Length: 124
Image (cartoon, rainbow, N blue to C red; front, side, top):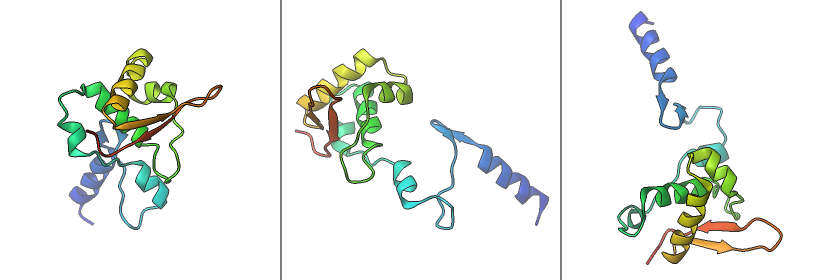
């Protein structure tokens, strides 16, 4: 193999994206189907084009949706969202309320437990 090709492969594998090191998702990789789905989130265009939503609202929705990969309810807490995004906890609660009002999120409150957040693809 050519030396330039070897160096190029090393550089490609070491490059980091906005959320950490780049990971190759080829069909022959060792990642399971569950892990592949956990690395990508489909975002509806209506969410991105909604003038009522701020960028942090969209990031909170994406963070919640990233835990919705096994077709059960996503069990993600506000502190986990904070750790993953760096958004203040108070801002996350505000974003959740806005997303719920815009029908991008269904919040199931459970007294004595954490709430369950179910992201919805369609808003109003």
